[in-house]
Image (tube, rainbow, N blue to C red; front, side, top):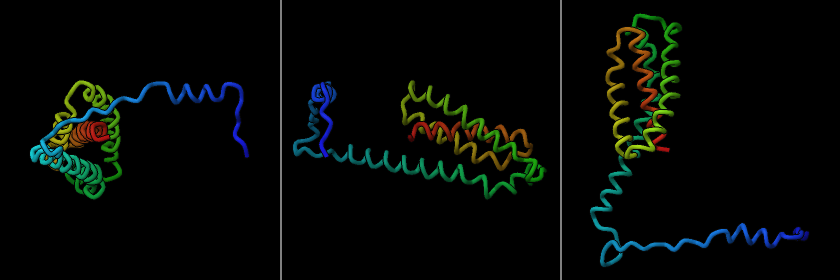
Length: 156
């Protein structure tokens, strides 16, 4: 089966493929032997480990609500069916955190933003068991939702 060769097909294809000249690759001289220095290698490994830990922590923090839901209901003296507002609070925080995370992502150092949101997530996870009222628990879950979505924004 032949390919379609209408009027102007070759010139249109050439224009699409040759829209811009390929950029020359810059070579970076790192050392005499062309290898990375020990400091750069350690820094790359450190960043990689931190990013893996951030993903692990984010997954654990998001998933922890299910197994601890009954204990949280007992802490605030409510039954499980009347405590579903914490899911709404976390979802609202998650939604508003994407807006805030997008704005901060354009204006801040990405690793600083990642670190701050990890600290907020850690502090939130620490203080959630100490919430004795449902309103305080919902607010903490909203704050956690904001930090989760900022982590998602930075890590994506």
